[in-house]
Amino acid sequence: MADTFKLQNVLDHRQRLENLAQQKLADSLRRETELQLRIVAARAELEKTRQELNRLQRSGITAQELLLYNGSLQRQRKNLKGLLEQALCHRREVSGNRELLTVASREKKLLENLKEKKEAENQVLNRRRESAALDELALRLGKYFP
Image 1: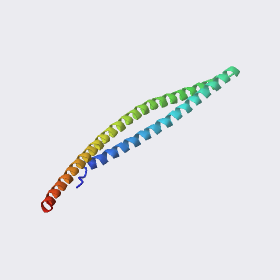
Image 2: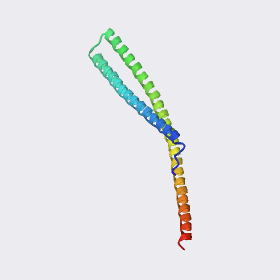
Image 3: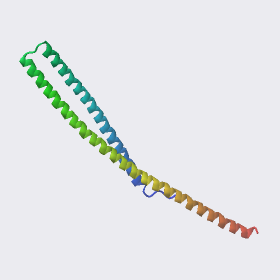
Image 4: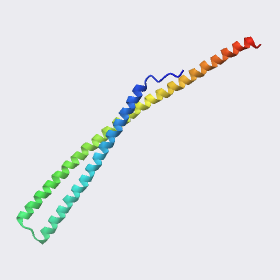
């Protein structure tokens, strides 16, 4: 006489929500990692351009080349600044996704605990019914076999 857990559909839904939250967090972490690699590359490119400009300035550079290098440095700085701003947004997104996963996991765990409690209660109830049935059987048999 095992009663089914009446909230199993809700528990399954909570499991799906937790899985989605895990996937969302993994995706945002992947994007953040990719962005960090782009930032490292942009910083390296900026540093390389600076070093090249410094080398050319020591050996002699025309005004037009200086303007080109300065324009390139400005574009690279602007690009790096944009990447850093994106990184900040991604950090917030990752933090939010971690919080969503925490909430989803907590809600699922609460339902799992409720299910375990109900199963334990059902086991106790089943043992009591079985014990009562055995007692009744013993009483009936006691009438026939004194």
